Image 1 (tube, helix red, strand yellow):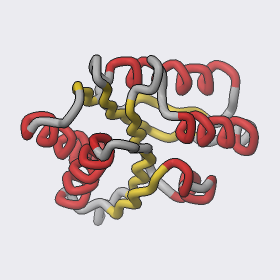
Image 2 (cartoon, helix red, strand yellow):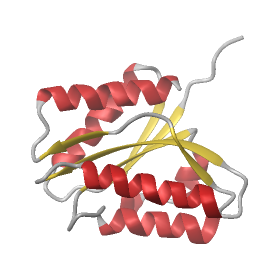
Image 3 (cartoon, helix red, strand yellow):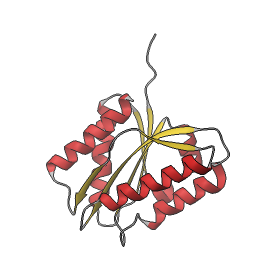
Image 4 (spheres, helix red, strand yellow):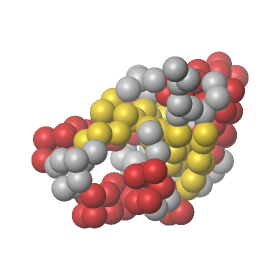
Length: 154
């Protein structure tokens, strides 16, 4: 039996370009593993994009110790429009910030845990995230590519 190619959605926000560089590395990694990948800024992502994918990867800069507002708005829209649907989506996260991207990983994990506790629509953590401070190094970009590959193969 032939395995179906994964269809991934990468939803991210980037103001300085650092998160976008990471998003493109995740995209490259997923493509190299044979996935169909949609790369979209949070403001341009729709609920149809989310419903149409097999898994989603979120990326954000750290803004005041939290995720970017446009990504928070995306989660708010999911909550308002999809929370009663019986759906489970694997997810992963990448983040960047001047003090590290850990607040992004923690914030998105908490949001996704809230879905699992209060909604039929569930986000299920598939892999550990990638985080960095400021401009991503070649090593961090390789980690992003590996994250894309892992998500494509999950």
